[in-house]
Image (tube, rainbow, N blue to C red; front, side, top):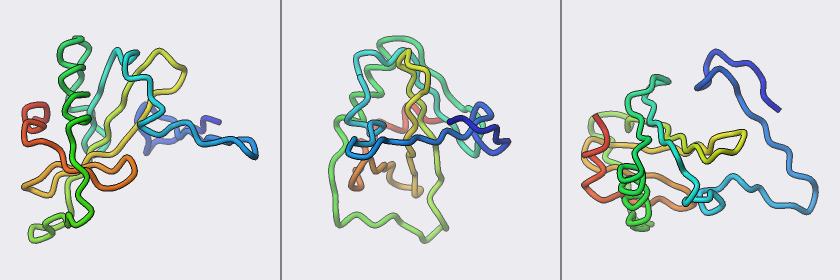
Length: 127
């Protein structure tokens, strides 16, 4: 269900209902990576980057793939809360996939399940 929301990217908050006995299908592992045609990056609800070039998309996806699980990782809170970004992945489906990305001033990380630390090259994609 899509509900109008002035606080959501593209103006709608999406609610997903999974029938009993079925699994939630919006995890990163469920996203068809070979169908990603556009990636958008948002900060504080404003788009700051967009990639539609296949080479750039593949480079960004490769960085996510190269992220490393680090269960002991603790974001550096010396300078306050991490900066939150939202990554949107368009695959031609009616609804885009959305995942959070964070930056603590030193390290980019995300958590599709557990916390994964991203390679330093992620800074090349984020203005």
